[in-house]
Image (tube, rainbow, N blue to C red; front, side, top):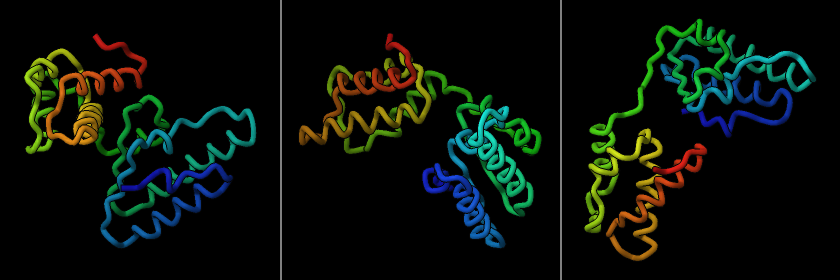
Length: 180
């Protein structure tokens, strides 16, 4: 997994150098390069308003060239496909869309993400939570971590419904949504 925080630099030319090192390390090793939140790096090229735009466009062009020349597999993930440069999209052999999980899938995610050592208070109904709150797997994981940390901070294994709901509220707030 390529950690973009270790690759992207605010200094002109440094991002290309860092990417070059990643691709050089991977060459001939049968590595799969996985870029998470790839839209941050593979974003659309823009019109030239200033020098920053020119260098940002150069980064995208450089990355496009490196991806094309890489002999191994490159996997990109994004929640913002519309922010990806079309030049990358045209070169993908496959695009796999993962739709929002339905209520049954969300319930399974909730059940699988909590530790088996956890116990739930009497108010917690994961089936109802899954039905009522449409969340992606990553958001559910964030809520599970929040509720688990709250339980640990109290020195207990009991997951409280109030903590789950607060975690859900926080996730919705991140996206500018209101919890219903």
